[in-house]
Length: 256
Image 1 (cartoon, helix red, strand yellow):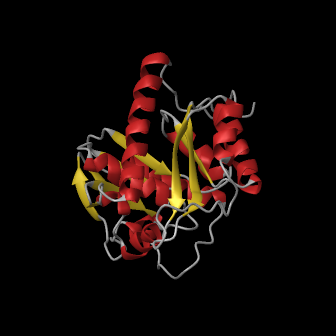
Image 2: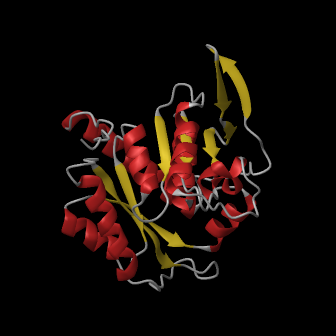
């Protein structure tokens, strides 16, 4: 969520029209990161339909299930209910014209992922993982899910989050507390591009907690990292669109 939120802000900082869907139904955190957790989306009637108006801050339009539940309550929903809620946030919302529509997927492979690929034609997936082998095992499953014959969503590249720790008092030092370059090796192994490496630094945590994403400050080290990531994603999307056919919504095959 931290990477997706800052990527969205970095794209908006470059002048693009950006939408962000927080699809982590059971752990929505994007409203806090964008400093809009106390906001409530309005409804507007358009063409006879009541449409949800996304909340906008820092140039990013955003919707999350977090707007519709008590922030301290656990969301205990069956898969079908969670899936229907997500469909509403996509189909029953007035997103307007966007250059980039980012979806913050929950970890793993689940009903939520299947619902999204059956609802939206996804241009490409960015796989985010920390460098350690335990996390990379899940990243491999994510790559397998997206590139499988049934889903067939291109992988735009990988992002290594928490790539190294840099203390504020020693900005030139790097401590690889979660292992070194695990995502880089996975990207090479799978034939995908490593889009970026995001370090563990205090400012990223503080920015998330305070609702001020570090990508807002493109002159800071962390801001430059997310700006560079946004540039890589822009190039990857352009390349994907020029070289590969359109992605189609995954059809639900009914049992005979």
